[in-house]
Length: 82
Image (cartoon, rainbow, N blue to C red; front, side):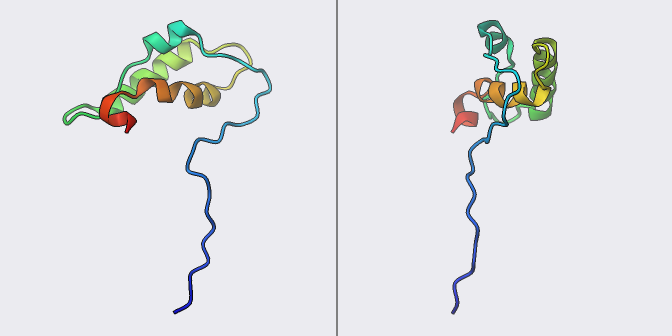
C-alpha cells in the first residue's frame, strides 16, 4: 500500500504583512464579547457583537481583517479556548 502524498500546512493563524503597525488597545480587549463555548451559547450573536466592537475601534489605515485576527483570541474563554 503506497503512502499518500500530503502537504502539511500550519494550523496556526498566519498574520498578513502590516502596512501600518498597530497594537491592540487595552480598552478594546475589555470591550470584546466573551465566548465561553457553553451549551446554549449563541456563537452567531457573539461574532456579531465582536464585529461591531472591532469596527468601532479600528485605527486609520488598518484593515478590519487585521483587527479581527489580532483581537479574536482575546474573545475566547473557558471551553472555547481549549
